[in-house]
Image (cartoon, rainbow, N blue to C red; front, top):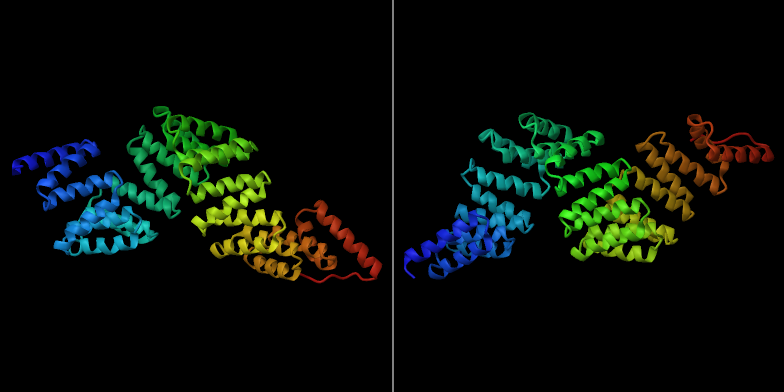
Length: 438
Protein backbone atom coordinates (compact mmCIF):
# COMPACT_ATOMS: atom_id res chain seq x y z
CA UNK A 1 0.00 0.00 0.00
CA UNK A 2 1.29 3.48 -0.84
CA UNK A 3 1.70 6.11 1.92
CA UNK A 4 -1.54 7.81 0.95
CA UNK A 5 -3.39 4.51 1.51
CA UNK A 6 -2.31 3.95 5.09
CA UNK A 7 -2.76 7.66 5.85
CA UNK A 8 -6.37 7.35 4.70
CA UNK A 9 -6.81 4.36 7.00
CA UNK A 10 -5.38 6.34 9.91
CA UNK A 11 -7.73 9.24 9.15
CA UNK A 12 -10.68 6.85 9.14
CA UNK A 13 -9.48 5.41 12.44
CA UNK A 14 -9.29 8.91 13.92
CA UNK A 15 -12.77 9.73 12.58
CA UNK A 16 -14.28 6.57 14.08
CA UNK A 17 -12.45 7.18 17.38
CA UNK A 18 -13.90 10.68 17.64
CA UNK A 19 -17.35 9.22 16.90
CA UNK A 20 -16.73 6.77 19.80
CA UNK A 21 -16.96 3.83 17.40
CA UNK A 22 -13.94 2.15 18.92
CA UNK A 23 -13.97 -1.33 17.40
CA UNK A 24 -14.04 -0.04 13.78
CA UNK A 25 -11.39 2.53 14.74
CA UNK A 26 -9.19 -0.28 16.03
CA UNK A 27 -9.57 -2.27 12.82
CA UNK A 28 -8.59 0.74 10.69
CA UNK A 29 -5.54 1.63 12.79
CA UNK A 30 -4.36 -1.99 12.81
CA UNK A 31 -4.51 -2.03 9.01
CA UNK A 32 -2.55 1.23 8.88
CA UNK A 33 0.10 -0.18 11.24
CA UNK A 34 0.52 -3.30 9.13
CA UNK A 35 1.72 -1.06 6.32
CA UNK A 36 3.72 1.34 8.50
CA UNK A 37 4.53 -0.56 11.74
CA UNK A 38 6.99 2.00 13.07
CA UNK A 39 4.68 5.02 12.86
CA UNK A 40 4.55 6.44 16.40
CA UNK A 41 1.55 8.63 15.61
CA UNK A 42 -0.46 5.57 14.62
CA UNK A 43 0.70 3.74 17.74
CA UNK A 44 -0.33 6.68 19.94
CA UNK A 45 -3.81 6.65 18.40
CA UNK A 46 -4.04 2.89 18.95
CA UNK A 47 -3.11 3.38 22.62
CA UNK A 48 -5.95 5.90 23.00
CA UNK A 49 -8.41 3.49 21.38
CA UNK A 50 -7.23 0.54 23.51
CA UNK A 51 -7.83 2.54 26.66
CA UNK A 52 -11.40 3.23 25.58
CA UNK A 53 -12.10 -0.51 25.23
CA UNK A 54 -10.33 -1.37 28.52
CA UNK A 55 -7.46 -3.22 26.86
CA UNK A 56 -4.89 -1.55 29.06
CA UNK A 57 -2.28 -4.34 29.03
CA UNK A 58 -2.00 -4.03 25.24
CA UNK A 59 -1.77 -0.24 25.52
CA UNK A 60 1.01 -0.63 28.09
CA UNK A 61 2.94 -3.01 25.82
CA UNK A 62 2.77 -0.49 22.96
CA UNK A 63 4.03 2.31 25.21
CA UNK A 64 6.94 0.20 26.46
CA UNK A 65 7.80 -0.72 22.88
CA UNK A 66 7.90 2.96 21.89
CA UNK A 67 9.99 3.84 24.95
CA UNK A 68 12.51 1.21 23.91
CA UNK A 69 13.66 3.52 21.12
CA UNK A 70 13.14 6.80 23.02
CA UNK A 71 13.23 6.21 26.81
CA UNK A 72 12.76 9.89 27.68
CA UNK A 73 9.82 10.67 25.42
CA UNK A 74 7.40 12.74 27.50
CA UNK A 75 4.46 11.62 25.38
CA UNK A 76 5.19 7.91 25.77
CA UNK A 77 6.00 8.19 29.46
CA UNK A 78 2.59 9.81 29.83
CA UNK A 79 0.95 7.01 27.81
CA UNK A 80 2.68 4.39 29.95
CA UNK A 81 1.68 6.20 33.15
CA UNK A 82 -1.95 6.30 32.05
CA UNK A 83 -1.96 2.58 31.20
CA UNK A 84 -0.46 1.73 34.59
CA UNK A 85 -3.02 3.95 36.31
CA UNK A 86 -5.90 2.25 34.50
CA UNK A 87 -4.43 -1.12 35.57
CA UNK A 88 -4.37 0.01 39.20
CA UNK A 89 -0.56 0.06 39.35
CA UNK A 90 -0.49 3.52 40.86
CA UNK A 91 3.02 3.62 42.34
CA UNK A 92 4.58 2.72 38.97
CA UNK A 93 2.27 5.19 37.25
CA UNK A 94 3.46 7.98 39.54
CA UNK A 95 7.11 7.38 38.64
CA UNK A 96 6.24 7.50 34.93
CA UNK A 97 4.12 10.64 35.14
CA UNK A 98 6.87 12.43 37.07
CA UNK A 99 9.21 11.54 34.21
CA UNK A 100 6.67 12.80 31.69
CA UNK A 101 6.20 16.11 33.51
CA UNK A 102 9.93 16.75 33.81
CA UNK A 103 10.41 20.38 32.92
CA UNK A 104 6.83 20.64 31.53
CA UNK A 105 5.52 21.80 34.88
CA UNK A 106 2.55 23.61 33.35
CA UNK A 107 1.29 20.83 31.07
CA UNK A 108 -2.37 20.65 32.10
CA UNK A 109 -2.94 17.12 30.80
CA UNK A 110 0.08 15.72 32.65
CA UNK A 111 -0.81 17.53 35.88
CA UNK A 112 -4.39 16.27 35.67
CA UNK A 113 -3.13 12.70 35.22
CA UNK A 114 -0.79 13.06 38.20
CA UNK A 115 -3.66 14.33 40.37
CA UNK A 116 -5.71 11.25 39.46
CA UNK A 117 -2.77 8.94 40.20
CA UNK A 118 -2.16 10.56 43.59
CA UNK A 119 -5.86 10.15 44.33
CA UNK A 120 -5.56 6.47 43.42
CA UNK A 121 -2.72 6.19 45.94
CA UNK A 122 -4.88 7.81 48.61
CA UNK A 123 -2.64 10.88 48.69
CA UNK A 124 -5.61 13.21 48.47
CA UNK A 125 -4.00 16.29 50.02
CA UNK A 126 -1.28 16.26 47.33
CA UNK A 127 -3.87 15.58 44.64
CA UNK A 128 -5.90 18.54 45.87
CA UNK A 129 -2.85 20.81 45.73
CA UNK A 130 -2.34 19.82 42.09
CA UNK A 131 -5.99 20.43 41.23
CA UNK A 132 -5.79 23.86 42.87
CA UNK A 133 -2.76 24.56 40.67
CA UNK A 134 -4.68 23.44 37.60
CA UNK A 135 -7.44 25.87 38.51
CA UNK A 136 -4.88 28.66 38.91
CA UNK A 137 -3.70 27.92 35.37
CA UNK A 138 -7.21 27.51 33.97
CA UNK A 139 -9.87 28.87 36.37
CA UNK A 140 -12.80 28.07 34.08
CA UNK A 141 -11.96 24.40 33.53
CA UNK A 142 -15.10 22.45 34.55
CA UNK A 143 -13.17 19.16 34.80
CA UNK A 144 -10.78 20.61 37.39
CA UNK A 145 -13.63 22.15 39.36
CA UNK A 146 -15.37 18.79 39.35
CA UNK A 147 -12.14 17.04 40.39
CA UNK A 148 -11.72 19.49 43.28
CA UNK A 149 -15.23 18.79 44.49
CA UNK A 150 -14.69 15.03 44.15
CA UNK A 151 -11.47 15.16 46.18
CA UNK A 152 -13.08 17.23 48.91
CA UNK A 153 -15.93 14.72 49.02
CA UNK A 154 -13.52 11.76 49.25
CA UNK A 155 -11.61 13.53 52.03
CA UNK A 156 -14.84 13.90 54.00
CA UNK A 157 -14.86 17.67 53.56
CA UNK A 158 -18.51 17.66 52.54
CA UNK A 159 -19.27 21.23 53.59
CA UNK A 160 -16.42 22.54 51.40
CA UNK A 161 -17.58 20.37 48.51
CA UNK A 162 -21.14 21.61 49.03
CA UNK A 163 -20.00 25.22 48.53
CA UNK A 164 -18.71 24.28 45.06
CA UNK A 165 -21.93 22.41 44.28
CA UNK A 166 -23.98 25.42 45.42
CA UNK A 167 -21.98 27.72 43.14
CA UNK A 168 -22.53 25.36 40.21
CA UNK A 169 -26.25 25.18 40.96
CA UNK A 170 -26.49 28.95 41.26
CA UNK A 171 -24.95 29.27 37.79
CA UNK A 172 -27.25 26.55 36.35
CA UNK A 173 -30.30 26.28 38.63
CA UNK A 174 -32.14 23.86 36.35
CA UNK A 175 -29.18 21.54 35.72
CA UNK A 176 -30.19 17.97 36.69
CA UNK A 177 -26.51 17.05 37.07
CA UNK A 178 -25.88 19.93 39.49
CA UNK A 179 -29.02 19.05 41.45
CA UNK A 180 -27.96 15.40 41.71
CA UNK A 181 -24.44 16.35 42.76
CA UNK A 182 -25.78 18.49 45.58
CA UNK A 183 -28.19 15.71 46.56
CA UNK A 184 -25.26 13.29 46.94
CA UNK A 185 -23.41 15.70 49.24
CA UNK A 186 -26.53 16.36 51.31
CA UNK A 187 -26.90 12.59 51.70
CA UNK A 188 -23.36 12.36 53.06
CA UNK A 189 -24.11 15.21 55.47
CA UNK A 190 -27.19 13.39 56.75
CA UNK A 191 -29.56 16.07 55.45
CA UNK A 192 -31.87 13.49 53.93
CA UNK A 193 -35.05 15.51 53.34
CA UNK A 194 -33.10 18.17 51.44
CA UNK A 195 -31.22 15.52 49.50
CA UNK A 196 -34.43 13.79 48.41
CA UNK A 197 -35.93 17.12 47.34
CA UNK A 198 -32.92 17.84 45.10
CA UNK A 199 -32.65 14.35 43.65
CA UNK A 200 -36.39 14.29 42.88
CA UNK A 201 -35.93 17.50 40.87
CA UNK A 202 -33.07 15.86 38.97
CA UNK A 203 -35.12 12.72 38.35
CA UNK A 204 -37.95 14.84 36.96
CA UNK A 205 -35.84 15.31 33.82
CA UNK A 206 -34.24 11.83 33.85
CA UNK A 207 -36.60 9.45 35.67
CA UNK A 208 -34.53 6.35 34.95
CA UNK A 209 -31.12 7.73 35.90
CA UNK A 210 -29.50 4.90 37.85
CA UNK A 211 -26.99 6.82 40.04
CA UNK A 212 -29.66 9.33 41.03
CA UNK A 213 -32.14 6.60 41.91
CA UNK A 214 -29.40 5.02 44.00
CA UNK A 215 -28.89 8.33 45.85
CA UNK A 216 -32.60 8.50 46.58
CA UNK A 217 -32.62 4.87 47.73
CA UNK A 218 -29.74 5.50 50.14
CA UNK A 219 -31.56 8.49 51.63
CA UNK A 220 -34.68 6.41 52.18
CA UNK A 221 -32.58 3.60 53.68
CA UNK A 222 -30.89 5.98 56.13
CA UNK A 223 -34.32 7.33 57.11
CA UNK A 224 -35.58 3.79 57.76
CA UNK A 225 -37.91 3.76 54.73
CA UNK A 226 -36.66 0.39 53.45
CA UNK A 227 -39.71 -0.32 51.29
CA UNK A 228 -39.19 2.95 49.41
CA UNK A 229 -35.51 2.10 48.99
CA UNK A 230 -36.42 -1.27 47.45
CA UNK A 231 -38.82 0.47 45.06
CA UNK A 232 -36.01 2.80 43.90
CA UNK A 233 -33.74 -0.20 43.32
CA UNK A 234 -36.46 -1.89 41.26
CA UNK A 235 -36.79 1.24 39.10
CA UNK A 236 -33.03 1.39 38.63
CA UNK A 237 -32.83 -2.32 37.76
CA UNK A 238 -35.51 -1.85 35.10
CA UNK A 239 -33.00 0.44 33.36
CA UNK A 240 -29.80 -1.47 34.20
CA UNK A 241 -30.61 -5.10 35.07
CA UNK A 242 -26.97 -6.18 34.82
CA UNK A 243 -25.69 -3.79 37.48
CA UNK A 244 -24.43 -5.90 40.42
CA UNK A 245 -24.34 -2.93 42.83
CA UNK A 246 -28.08 -2.47 42.37
CA UNK A 247 -28.79 -6.13 43.13
CA UNK A 248 -26.52 -5.94 46.19
CA UNK A 249 -28.16 -2.75 47.45
CA UNK A 250 -31.59 -4.28 46.96
CA UNK A 251 -30.44 -7.29 49.00
CA UNK A 252 -29.46 -5.04 51.91
CA UNK A 253 -32.75 -3.14 51.83
CA UNK A 254 -34.81 -6.35 51.64
CA UNK A 255 -32.93 -7.84 54.59
CA UNK A 256 -33.89 -4.80 56.67
CA UNK A 257 -37.51 -5.64 55.88
CA UNK A 258 -36.83 -9.24 57.07
CA UNK A 259 -37.56 -10.46 53.53
CA UNK A 260 -34.54 -12.71 53.76
CA UNK A 261 -35.25 -15.21 50.98
CA UNK A 262 -35.72 -12.37 48.48
CA UNK A 263 -32.60 -10.69 49.87
CA UNK A 264 -30.53 -13.83 49.30
CA UNK A 265 -31.92 -14.01 45.75
CA UNK A 266 -30.75 -10.46 45.06
CA UNK A 267 -27.34 -11.11 46.62
CA UNK A 268 -26.97 -14.22 44.45
CA UNK A 269 -27.77 -12.16 41.34
CA UNK A 270 -25.02 -9.70 42.28
CA UNK A 271 -22.58 -12.57 42.80
CA UNK A 272 -23.57 -14.21 39.51
CA UNK A 273 -22.36 -11.04 37.79
CA UNK A 274 -19.32 -10.45 40.06
CA UNK A 275 -18.51 -13.78 41.74
CA UNK A 276 -15.22 -12.57 43.21
CA UNK A 277 -16.61 -9.44 44.85
CA UNK A 278 -15.56 -9.35 48.51
CA UNK A 279 -18.26 -6.73 49.17
CA UNK A 280 -21.10 -8.84 47.74
CA UNK A 281 -19.90 -11.98 49.56
CA UNK A 282 -19.88 -9.95 52.77
CA UNK A 283 -23.44 -8.75 52.13
CA UNK A 284 -24.66 -12.31 51.53
CA UNK A 285 -22.83 -13.49 54.65
CA UNK A 286 -24.49 -10.78 56.73
CA UNK A 287 -27.95 -11.75 55.46
CA UNK A 288 -27.28 -15.43 56.22
CA UNK A 289 -26.16 -14.41 59.72
CA UNK A 290 -29.47 -12.61 60.27
CA UNK A 291 -31.22 -15.80 59.13
CA UNK A 292 -29.13 -17.65 61.76
CA UNK A 293 -27.56 -19.82 59.07
CA UNK A 294 -24.20 -19.45 60.75
CA UNK A 295 -22.23 -22.10 58.88
CA UNK A 296 -23.28 -20.73 55.47
CA UNK A 297 -22.62 -17.18 56.66
CA UNK A 298 -19.08 -18.06 57.74
CA UNK A 299 -18.32 -19.67 54.37
CA UNK A 300 -19.25 -16.39 52.62
CA UNK A 301 -17.40 -14.26 55.16
CA UNK A 302 -14.22 -16.34 55.02
CA UNK A 303 -14.18 -16.16 51.22
CA UNK A 304 -14.79 -12.41 51.38
CA UNK A 305 -11.84 -11.97 53.73
CA UNK A 306 -9.60 -14.03 51.44
CA UNK A 307 -10.30 -11.40 48.78
CA UNK A 308 -10.18 -8.40 51.13
CA UNK A 309 -8.56 -9.21 54.50
CA UNK A 310 -9.09 -5.65 55.80
CA UNK A 311 -12.86 -5.46 55.35
CA UNK A 312 -13.95 -4.02 58.69
CA UNK A 313 -17.65 -4.82 58.23
CA UNK A 314 -16.97 -8.47 57.36
CA UNK A 315 -14.52 -8.96 60.25
CA UNK A 316 -17.16 -7.65 62.67
CA UNK A 317 -19.96 -9.76 61.17
CA UNK A 318 -17.69 -12.81 61.27
CA UNK A 319 -16.98 -12.17 64.94
CA UNK A 320 -20.73 -11.95 65.61
CA UNK A 321 -21.34 -15.24 63.77
CA UNK A 322 -18.59 -17.00 65.72
CA UNK A 323 -19.87 -15.57 69.00
CA UNK A 324 -23.41 -16.78 68.29
CA UNK A 325 -22.03 -20.30 67.70
CA UNK A 326 -20.01 -20.07 70.95
CA UNK A 327 -16.65 -20.13 69.16
CA UNK A 328 -15.60 -17.32 71.45
CA UNK A 329 -11.82 -17.46 71.05
CA UNK A 330 -12.20 -17.20 67.27
CA UNK A 331 -14.77 -14.43 67.71
CA UNK A 332 -12.28 -12.50 69.84
CA UNK A 333 -9.53 -12.95 67.24
CA UNK A 334 -11.80 -11.63 64.49
CA UNK A 335 -12.80 -8.65 66.63
CA UNK A 336 -9.13 -7.94 67.40
CA UNK A 337 -8.43 -7.91 63.65
CA UNK A 338 -11.25 -5.37 63.22
CA UNK A 339 -9.88 -3.21 66.05
CA UNK A 340 -6.44 -3.28 64.46
CA UNK A 341 -8.06 -1.39 61.56
CA UNK A 342 -10.22 0.93 63.68
CA UNK A 343 -8.81 0.89 67.24
CA UNK A 344 -11.07 3.55 68.77
CA UNK A 345 -14.40 2.53 67.27
CA UNK A 346 -16.97 2.59 70.08
CA UNK A 347 -19.14 -0.30 68.85
CA UNK A 348 -16.15 -2.62 68.36
CA UNK A 349 -14.72 -1.94 71.81
CA UNK A 350 -18.12 -2.68 73.32
CA UNK A 351 -18.44 -5.94 71.39
CA UNK A 352 -14.95 -7.01 72.50
CA UNK A 353 -15.89 -6.36 76.13
CA UNK A 354 -18.92 -8.63 75.80
CA UNK A 355 -16.86 -11.43 74.25
CA UNK A 356 -14.31 -11.23 77.08
CA UNK A 357 -17.17 -11.37 79.60
CA UNK A 358 -18.64 -14.45 77.90
CA UNK A 359 -15.20 -16.09 77.96
CA UNK A 360 -15.19 -15.60 81.73
CA UNK A 361 -12.32 -13.14 81.49
CA UNK A 362 -14.03 -10.57 83.68
CA UNK A 363 -10.87 -8.75 84.75
CA UNK A 364 -9.79 -8.41 81.11
CA UNK A 365 -13.26 -7.13 80.24
CA UNK A 366 -13.07 -4.58 83.04
CA UNK A 367 -9.61 -3.46 81.92
CA UNK A 368 -11.06 -2.97 78.43
CA UNK A 369 -13.98 -0.99 79.88
CA UNK A 370 -11.71 1.28 81.94
CA UNK A 371 -9.57 1.92 78.88
CA UNK A 372 -12.70 2.67 76.84
CA UNK A 373 -14.01 5.03 79.52
CA UNK A 374 -10.82 7.06 79.17
CA UNK A 375 -11.66 7.53 75.49
CA UNK A 376 -15.43 7.88 76.09
CA UNK A 377 -15.81 9.37 79.61
CA UNK A 378 -19.01 8.41 81.48
CA UNK A 379 -20.28 6.47 78.48
CA UNK A 380 -23.46 4.68 79.65
CA UNK A 381 -22.95 1.67 77.35
CA UNK A 382 -19.56 0.87 78.89
CA UNK A 383 -20.81 1.52 82.44
CA UNK A 384 -23.69 -0.86 81.78
CA UNK A 385 -21.25 -3.46 80.41
CA UNK A 386 -19.17 -3.15 83.59
CA UNK A 387 -22.26 -3.51 85.79
CA UNK A 388 -23.40 -6.65 83.95
CA UNK A 389 -19.90 -8.17 83.94
CA UNK A 390 -19.40 -7.68 87.68
CA UNK A 391 -22.92 -8.61 88.73
CA UNK A 392 -22.95 -11.66 86.45
CA UNK A 393 -19.65 -12.93 87.86
CA UNK A 394 -20.75 -12.79 91.47
CA UNK A 395 -19.22 -9.40 92.27
CA UNK A 396 -22.37 -7.26 92.68
CA UNK A 397 -20.87 -4.86 95.27
CA UNK A 398 -18.18 -3.86 92.75
CA UNK A 399 -20.94 -3.26 90.21
CA UNK A 400 -22.69 -0.75 92.47
CA UNK A 401 -20.77 2.43 91.47
CA UNK A 402 -21.51 1.75 87.80
CA UNK A 403 -25.16 1.04 88.64
CA UNK A 404 -25.46 4.30 90.59
CA UNK A 405 -23.90 6.27 87.71
CA UNK A 406 -26.47 4.85 85.29
CA UNK A 407 -29.38 5.41 87.70
CA UNK A 408 -28.31 9.02 88.14
CA UNK A 409 -29.16 9.45 84.45
CA UNK A 410 -32.20 7.17 84.38
CA UNK A 411 -33.68 6.45 87.81
CA UNK A 412 -36.26 4.09 86.31
CA UNK A 413 -33.74 1.69 84.68
CA UNK A 414 -35.25 -1.68 85.64
CA UNK A 415 -32.12 -3.80 85.13
CA UNK A 416 -29.94 -1.48 87.18
CA UNK A 417 -32.56 -1.24 89.94
CA UNK A 418 -32.58 -5.04 90.06
CA UNK A 419 -28.80 -5.21 90.43
CA UNK A 420 -28.88 -2.53 93.13
CA UNK A 421 -31.58 -4.38 95.05
CA UNK A 422 -29.48 -7.54 94.90
CA UNK A 423 -26.41 -5.68 96.15
CA UNK A 424 -28.37 -4.17 99.04
CA UNK A 425 -29.78 -7.56 100.04
CA UNK A 426 -26.34 -9.18 99.92
CA UNK A 427 -24.78 -6.34 101.93
CA UNK A 428 -27.50 -6.53 104.57
CA UNK A 429 -27.07 -10.28 104.88
CA UNK A 430 -23.29 -9.91 105.22
CA UNK A 431 -23.58 -6.99 107.62
CA UNK A 432 -21.70 -4.58 105.31
CA UNK A 433 -22.78 -1.38 103.65
CA UNK A 434 -19.89 -0.13 101.55
CA UNK A 435 -18.92 -0.46 97.94
CA UNK A 436 -15.74 0.43 96.15
CA UNK A 437 -15.71 3.49 93.92
CA UNK A 438 -15.20 3.37 90.18
